[in-house]
Each structure stands twice: as C-alpha cells, then as structure tokens.
Length: 389
Image 1 (tube, rainbow, N blue to C red):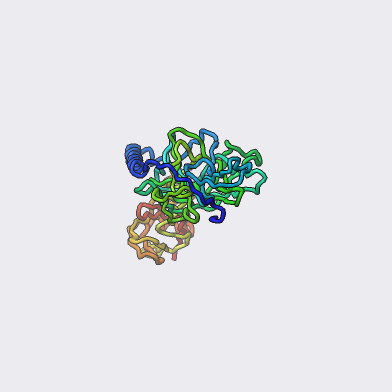
Image 2: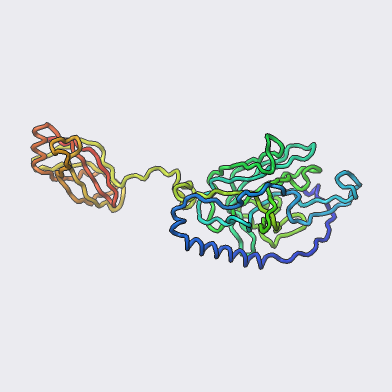
C-alpha cells in the first residue's frame, strides 16, 4: 500500500486530547450500566435476547472513505478532474479498519450481559467507484474490550460477510442486511464492532472502499482505528496511536448503523460462556433398562441399575402400573429401599416386596411393575416385569 500513499502531508491542526475525558466518560457509562443492571436484575434474568447498538433510525448518508475524522494528506499533482487545483486529497490509508459505537443518542453501546452476538443488522452498502471494479464487500464483526485509555482491545473476530453493493439489486442507503455470525461470543461491558480490510485499489479506491454504513446523528460518536494488519485478534486500538492517515480517530455526530441481537442462556450457543443452546439433553443420574427379574423365596427382587454420579444415594420404589387393573386405578406400593450405589458400575439392587405381589405373580405367571428411582432430586421410572425364579 505504501507505493501509492501521498508523500506531502499537511500539518494537522492540533486537536484537544480526548483520552482523559473519554476515559472518565467510559467509566461513568460502565458504572451507570452496572447500577442499572443491579436495579433491574430480576427483570433482566428473565430476558434472554436483547438488542444493542444503533436503532437504525436514519439512512446511511456517510461513508468510511470520506467521512472519518483523519486529516489525510494533500499531494501536488498536475491539474485533473480529480484535482482541478493541482492538489489531491487522500482522506486516509485504505487499510484494515475497525469501527465501533462509543456513544449514541439512543440505545446502548455496551454489551449488557455475557453471551452471543447471534444476529447483526447493518444498514447501507459498499459504494462502487465510477467505471471501477467491484469493491471489496467483505466485513467482519468483533468483540472489543474497552481499555483504560479510551481505546479497545480486539478479542474475537467473526467469519467474513458481504455487504451489498450500492445500486445493485436495489441496495441503497436504507438497505438493512442481516448477518448470523457463528459463535461470536461477547462479554458484558464490551463493544461489538465492525471490521473491514480497507479494499485499497491504486487510483480507484485510494482511501479504501467507501462503505456507506454511517449515519449523521447528533450526539453519537463512532470510534475508528486504521492500521494495515493492525486490527485483528489481540490488537490494541489505542488513542495514543495517531497519524494523518491512520491510527485512532473520534468521529463525532456519526453513528455506525449496526444493530446487534444479543442471546444469553438457552438462546446462546454453549460455545459461549453462560450459553446452553445446542447442548445434548442431560443424562439421568441413574440408568435402569426395561428388564425381567425373578423373585426368590425370600421375596427379594434384584433390579439391575447403573449410576453415573458420585455419590449415588437415593430411594427405589416398586409399585403397580397403569396396566394393573386389580388396583382399581390406585397406585399400590410393593416395596421400597434406600440405596448408596457404587458409581459407573452395574449393580443389582435387592428390593424386598410384599407377599401380595408374590401371590399375583403366581396367579398371573408374572406381573408388570413400575420402578421409580430418585437420585439427587432427579426421578426416573422404568417398567420391570417380575416372575418367580
């Protein structure tokens, strides 16, 4: 990229340092968010899906090529349609760019709870240069942790997605495209950002592809960080890194038109902390298969059981089942025993039954019963057929 970068920078006018007030503001935002979550804890625990980021209430009239707050550079060139006065302005390098909403006029910028960014909606499109090739349309989404200096650290980056091209298939400033990242885990207090690879093409996309995904919103602030190969996982997007063409910039009254749907608990993938989605059903602590067992002369029935937990303490009950019409619709208990079984081993649990059951077995040449086992508060039932040994 350096072969095409202009070489005659203008001296930028000094800007007030943003690090101290931004740091204070960020801490106040985090503190306020924590207090709000504390007050609303009972209600929040019931909400598993919420949205953060832009409300998408305005059209995307600004782009990442021309409307970010970098001074850029001016190069003396022969007069041309692009530089009628003989001075060509490059807004910034067309390199890797990270964008995130630092503050908004409406809506939350910080992730309220750890979970998964399950759905991301972006308003706008990628602009194609006049008579130029199709622009690079691939973007990624990132989880960013705020830094004490007002910047952010990149934690994780999603797979790539493609924005529509402006003017193609009806795409324009109000087009909202939905993306479904796989396993984009986010943490409470973080930002969710958008990342592009610049899309620089010499003499065509000099400041990168104009991604028209920003809106003019009074009171909003979008932060940006431009650095070739400098916005990937682990990168520190610090306000201390600035230049006329890259590094950190504060873009006031601009909103990244990106809305994030956050999923938690059972709505979030189990890959993310706190998520339970996609997990197989929990195994019962004890397994009892359908079986036929014999009762001996001491009225003892040995039921085969396999325990998966430690300790394996519980109570087993043999009773009549719905098919037993002799009990007149009432469950009748035939035998009950407490147990403490060795885990991960099939054990034959002896249960002494009533003589009444033995009489039924003799008369019917076998009786179907229901075994109920309760272990660690979990209950399993199984049909057990009993015959005379």
